[in-house]
Length: 195
Image 1 (cartoon, helix red, strand yellow):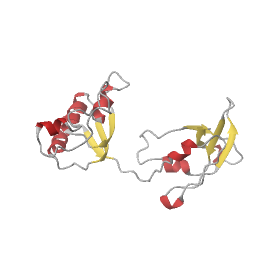
Image 2 (cartoon, rainbow, N blue to C red; image 1 turned 90 degrees about the vertical axis):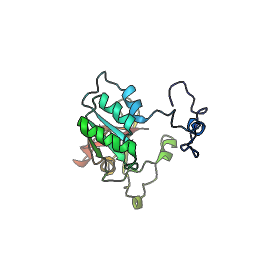
Image 3 (cartoon, rainbow, N blue to C red; image 1 turned 180 degrees about the vertical axis):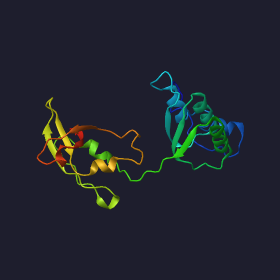
Image 4 (cartoon, rainbow, N blue to C red; image 1 turned 120 degrees about the vertical axis):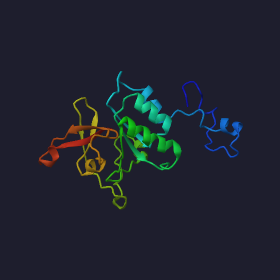
């Protein structure tokens, strides 16, 4: 919702059953700000000409206009579930005319995020990840960082699981650090998390 408009006071229902003006006003459609609009308005650069935008859904026609006017050069989207709706057909037409590239992101691996681990206290050892869901056990080494904070370094192939089909996509959470050890494998960069 726009800044200053409380999410608690605005309607969140998606469909207007009768199609009447009142039903439309009681739906979220006339009020909600789409992700593309928020991304362009809240950008970190003065000029986003030639940038790539990553979105969950293929952009609607209004968002396509914003993308084109901002001179964004490529759209990478996850889902095109509304492909045949007129506003999305119009988006593709405008992107084609304006020579804005668009493609669907197809991850090659499944990523599972366990938010329960956030609630663990320092010193707790997280349970092994479930291999039946395409994840791997994590072999942890704990050591003190240069600032005295505990560092947990995952030395298994869990880093590999975080890699996406597009290496240029922002990677979720954490940071990378060099781990010291006896073997060459242990000296590679590993995902590290402050505990």
